[in-house]
Image (cartoon, rainbow, N blue to C red; front, side, top):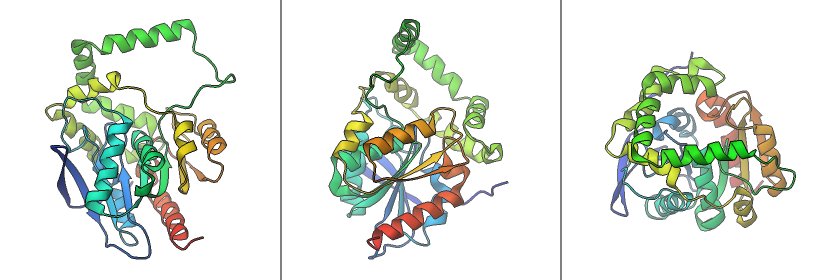
Length: 297
């Protein structure tokens, strides 16, 4: 059983008239870059508490709530990788005030990849943990059937309507549903604690949370992962939870390696959120990689 770790003390930053929550731990060091941790969909800075505690002895570590999530504002706007890319870039420019190694899980990984590719001056390195985002389809890629396409379009169009979207949101935000979902995507169910469920449930009660959920189905499709990788030049570490039922980690790993052959990768016995499920392993791998990076190795 993993023990709970006290969260780092946080603060707020005003970005484009919106309130953005972030936390900071550890001291700045001149011989190594700071770290910026970026959560996935529905999560927040709370999801990184074990990593903030484990990495802050060696690094200045920051974590941020993306606009629309956690304790940050939840305006009714268009959410996209470009929006979060600009938020992260501006945060490093205005608050951290130097390039950082970005570490992102799932959606946060995609947003971090957008920064590293399109705002390279902000990224000292990139760590992706079960990164989201699509690749350009090739002739070898299995195409969905007409029924699958129709169902996908039908569900999408249905969820664009306010009432169905609201009702689905009210269902998925129930604590019992949150717990069941987490237990499906974590290999170690003991890591699905009451605190974790509460951390994900709490922001769903905020004004605007339902609109953010609905906005996901309206958001424009962003740049493909392969296009982003073709623009990127910084070092890349990929950490995969191999038991993730939402993505085929080995196959996705092959795609990332195909488009960015200089990457370093590790496969862990964990699900979709390896940083929370096996934090000691993730912290050690990140620490060793960033220190080697800082030493010029």
